[in-house]
Image (cartoon, rainbow, N blue to C red; front, side):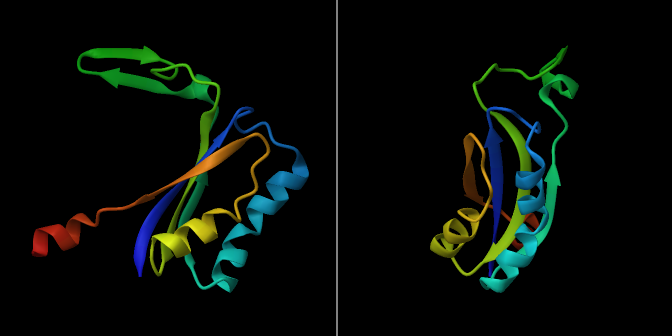
Length: 112
């Protein structure tokens, strides 16, 4: 099975109602029931806690201002991209979306 990152974007960041948070807490189980596997899942602290580094420039806060911010990330295992997309669609989103990206396993690259 391949690994994918599922990045969660929300306009309200981590300021989610309790019922949406509760859905996030059961997401790993629902993904497992659908034939996938959650390797890791984490919420990010709010944008104001970010430190951005660009070359020698270090600034507080995010580098770019956007309407949506990354609120969390899951690393999942899925059969293929279509399966990963189906699993990612289970993510409870209030006002935003998710982005699915295949991950590169550097251990496998080094062995080649």
